[in-house]
Image 1: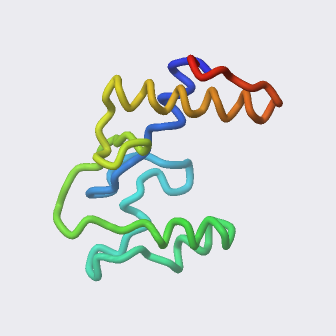
Image 2 (image 1 turned 30 degrees about the vertical axis):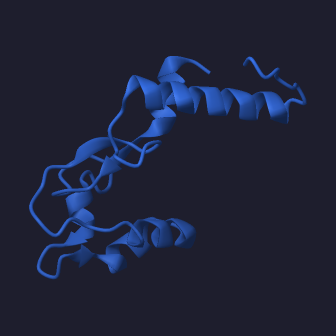
Length: 109
């Protein structure tokens, strides 16, 4: 796995004000939020997504305070990327892939 591939797999979004662009019909997450109630606009979400995706979206907690959307590192509890967490994730994924292919690694790996 390339470093770019690892970063793409590990990065996620922390939703703040929802002003980040998402897709063509609804270009911003904020268009899917009922700002008066501070909840997801489930009617709109159900119109544009399949039910399994609807449930995944509705399960994402919204920020209670006005924050900007920000990128986070999903593979560490703190949400912050470090070289250590990147290497640890790479090593884990590499071993998983090798195991899937039926290749064992030595203790030194």
